[in-house]
Image (cartoon, rainbow, N blue to C red; front, side, top):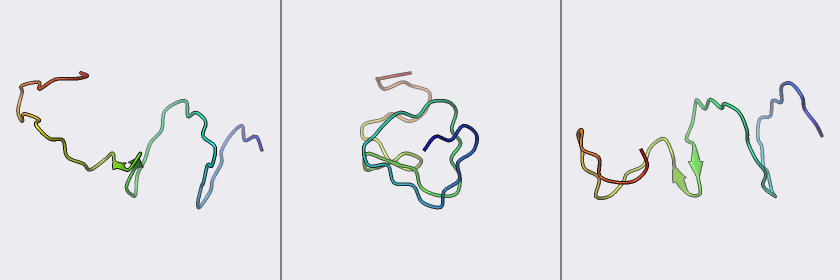
Length: 57
């Protein structure tokens, strides 16, 4: 199937993988990637405030 405009689905299950390109907006529920809830998770050994601990900026 090829959709060139708008695809609406109540559920979506992608079994093999692929790529997503472009801008995406997510609302109305948890966003989980590789077992980590992206919009609500903790990091250990991270300093609060204006200091930068390490890693990507």
